[in-house]
Length: 600
Ligand SMILES: Nc1ncnc2c1ncn2[C@@H]1O[C@H](COP(=O)(O)OP(=O)(O)OP(=O)(O)O)[C@@H](O)[C@H]1O
Image (cartoon, rainbow, N blue to C red; front, side, top):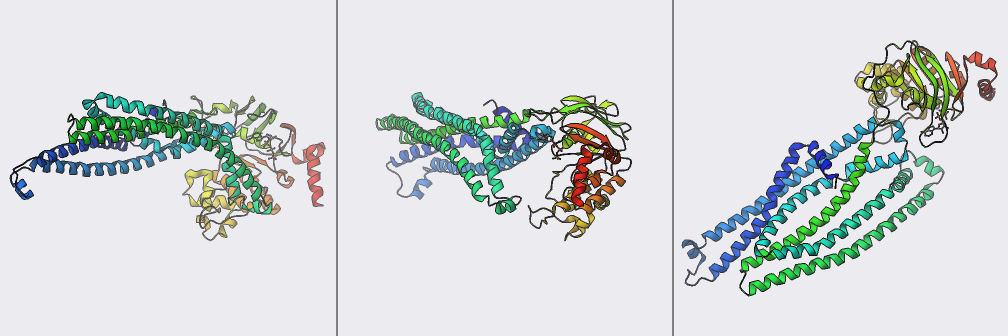
């Protein structure tokens, strides 16, 4: 329950005006039921009184003429007015609530995205964090009924108070009887909600797996392989096994909830009919009027259903509040890679370059150093190539350079200052990195390039220039709508590109970015030999004066670099120009010869 106040603050933050409106409307609505029931009692008493009169005119017109119906007419008009008002208020509440819920969903999703953007890459790669993120994401869209529920509870509590006040006036024990009958049901509900939550919480990793299997089994990206490898049955079986375990556990809880629910409801019903018997008895002995009978019986019925509803919604609120823990736990995750308060801007131009001083890094949860004892300088203005076998640590080095991770050992200097001393946003802005697993955005071709410098999204000449430099202009020329063509298959009218065509678009992002430091981490693997050669030749030309790093397994491209670092097992094994390395007769030469032999 400790999460309810911060949640209400979130609701208020989403829209103060709508929150205030829903509270006022609900307050008004809360007092209507008792008023309406009490007027009903007055009407019955008045009718009974009038029906008992003797010596009255034979027609209703006569009654009216003598003014006998004035009070009754007033009461009926009041009842009618209340009915209309209640309906109007109800509709107002629904309208305001639905708008507020929407606002809240938007607000929470925005916060979620904003917060996620501040977090470290390391966080996203951590399975626990992914579970947390998954649960938080569910909260931001799935917990919205909580808002209406909480407001509804406040309204119902006021209504209950008004009815209870009415009952107490007649006999305080009636209220006590009612509460005693309902409390076991409440405790039961709370217990089962806690059990469901614990189960859900423990099952998050499995549920993620379940969602993953379902997605893999039926998505555009995987359809090809599923067919070729005939994986459907394998995936379906896996889904079934996992979901059956869920089903069995949920069934157990649902069954005991149903059983205990029936027992507690029976207890409640006994309490209710006990009170009803008391009311009927007192009416028969003349201590209560017929109007009182209807008022009390009505109050009792309403109170019972209100309290039952309230208790249930309390326990479901408590359960939802438990789930809110996940949302707040997500917001509590703080990034480690941040900008220091006294951070300085990145020098422009960079004059010395980057210096790795005995840098070591291991991925969280891994017991192996991904890179270690890395010491080298990336000089300003030079083009450096990284080569090495799979898993040698090339991408890790680049990620450290872009401060996607901080080293666990040693340090990286930029123009003599630790990378951590620089403003993070500025540092990232001065770099353009295209990774091998670059994102294929389901956006237009133009936007797919513009993401390299999204602030210049409307600068068409810049986008076109970038496309041309990356050889992506020819790809775009073939698209029916050119730069405005939606690419990717997710949305209607989307056109899918080949792997190499996508890569050309991705490389164009690097030119779009036009940063001081350009890094291509093997986004060229799918390019045909000629294209890759041309891409790198241009890259070399266009990165003249810039600091550039390129990773490739093709030696024809690598040899263009000013200097080559050969990496093996997370360390630098050798460095030099293409010719120097060939002479050294080491791994570089071995790999080079292997590749060259393949072409002979
Ligand atoms: N996100 C990660 N979490 C844990 N370990 C990782 C992660 N990324 C890479 N590694 C490990 O770190 C080591 C270095 O990986 P890295 O991606 O830097 O290699 P690479 O030289 O770029 O390889 P490739 O040529 O295949 O792209 C590998 O052993 C890999 O298993």
